[in-house]
Length: 79
Image (cartoon, rainbow, N blue to C red; front, side):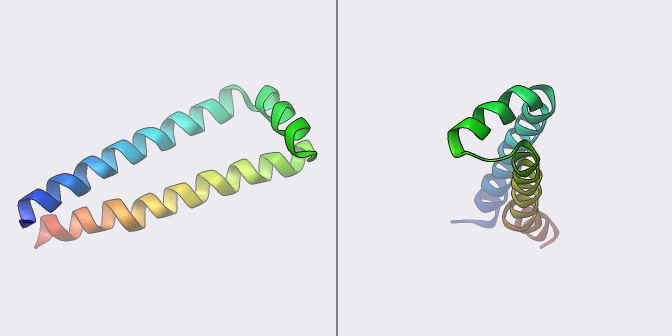
């Protein structure tokens, strides 16, 4: 594998993961009450706990995308 190939792979990984993150964020914001009600019934959780879980999910996904996709891509671009 060449550096150019790895740079391309990490670049597309970053784009796809950011797209999934944006889609998830928009869906959570747009359908917040409905989806929280569905998940509340599925997992017997309070709506406040579910909203905290959504926030934690989005925050963790963002951090993992930055650490495992964007930072390696930047490192390869600068090398």
